[in-house]
Image (cartoon, rainbow, N blue to C red; front, top):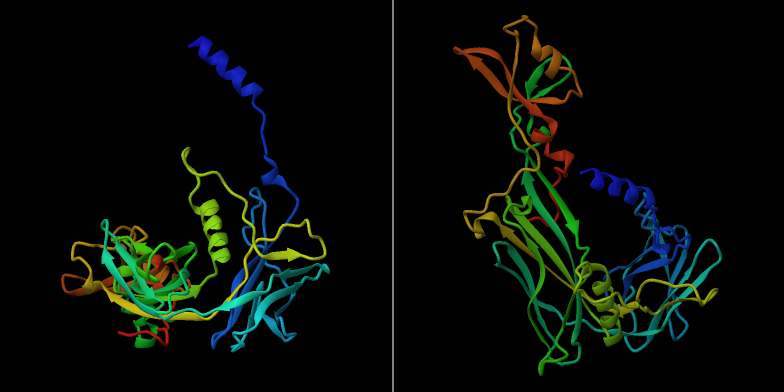
Length: 383
């Protein structure tokens, strides 16, 4: 034991903190995310800067840049910044016989240009569906190109789901007393959503026909609130060139499939965007030009196994809040429930021996769904 203690002191005393260059490097590189949409949908690009692994902030938007889509025939289409780092233009309806690139000029006088790329038409999505796989809901997509020309695909998606709080609240305080909750004050049902962050790709290049069958998009666990009531997913499909597919594949490998001792080593991810004012500066991203195809589906809880039970994200219970505390005689309702902004919310009246005695109540996270979503039903929602 003494020897072990001595060794521990020696080892600890000789240990020095090592900060690899990747963690502390001062450089911040431009990251370009988006696709030139040649059709009737908006073109959206997100510009940001890389952050060090040791940094506390994870978001570093590139603001106030000048962003333009240019054709090889000399036409230009300006994008407007709608919020920090997001640049948008309405439907471009481009001439698909031309090639296009992205020009970016930042506030520090740096200029970035992507290579000119052809427009790659995207075939329609045939269907989006789901199956039960490995005790989870697997969402998949089907598509094909009858012209046998596309072969390379990328998908993104937006999820929306309806959920409810743990308890229904029939009552609310107006600051003077507890009153019945009106329909427009309900806080039991809400909507929320998420957008894809994984890189989802598919290829038919090794097949005789350009057909993608049940390409997996995402999985939803049987305990997820996403499938508590009703779930919707909007899938976006983009056609890629072979070079774009290779870029996205390398990026996926480097960001999602590392960590094990038998994993492939990180590889150089070369995009098609360059800093013309400093050719040695790395730029992260690949600009493609294509049409986009989309399809939405809805899935209700009744379509899924009855044994699946979504779990609530908080531990909840109902407490009794009395008009007269049996020990001290205090009016707990007046103290805990009537003041606006309290942590407890009344759910229903409490009776003892047939007489009103107070209310049952629970904490806001167990009663008010709007702290995690919105009560406003999306315009596309289908009951």
